[in-house]
Image (cartoon, rainbow, N blue to C red; front, side, top):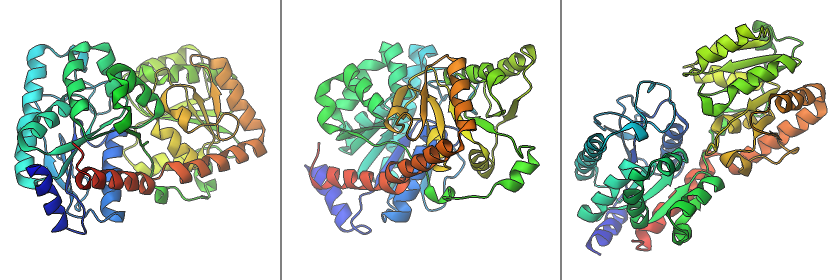
Length: 412
């Protein structure tokens, strides 16, 4: 009760009645979908919902997000990963850590969070990923009384399902959280199945999104098409990490039957294998562009493409690259895996194909290449879906309400 009263008092005398929220994140901000989630949620809360000087981020990254957001560098002995991630190619997976390494990581999260809690004095900690950083938030809750909510981005649940060493502490952390959020219905189902349906009442599905201002409703790309030699040609696009879970090899195999150009933008451990496949199979219509640090170049590719292809093999939590393509009015061809099913209606704003099926990929891509009106109609519907469900303004509003509910209604 003392901690709750202190929190409400801080809010009442604070800026515009908003609580102070500390984001606790376990990866560098730059390089992954969950990092984009943390960054753009924090920015939108500051820009739209009056959280200026009320948001801070504790993250193992010295690169500043934005001058308007207070940022603390989290010093970790190492940064383990769930699956492959750009910039962390040499990192161990959580499943590869020994007991001593897990303990050292836990201690580093506790030490770092205590330091920041003392300085920033948050009313709420918002934990991103339900792994060792969640354990630290549970510890802080016990010692300092600071409430927290936890967001699962999906890949954390996958990792815990394969390594039960992380189960008990995560379960305790979830039980003690005021609220839980997940990025997709698929992730929600997996979390509740693993940790118990009693968590359902305090679990909300809040997907990731995009900054719509980066994606104009219409954009003339004729000059760029000429520069890339695409005038009069159709183009299918993949962007993202080149890891086995993404299934890009099946797009490469499909390219032999695709009547147009295939462009693959991204980097990762699978790139060399894909290059060797292209050479061995004597495929002439696939281009590997590598990784683009320039965000605008990636966005331009979405607008240049006639079709976006995501042939994922695993239950990807959402797939923000698909949402970005949809915002560009580029219809997606995707596998029915993970959270993207909440965004795609087959034949309306995109097309589903079976995983590991190059023939279906080629057939779906060629159909959209050849049927201009269908392509256009799907693209318009895709854009409308994003406008209605996947903008950071809407997402930040939902978190704003959740934060206020935690501090005003006395949630545990």
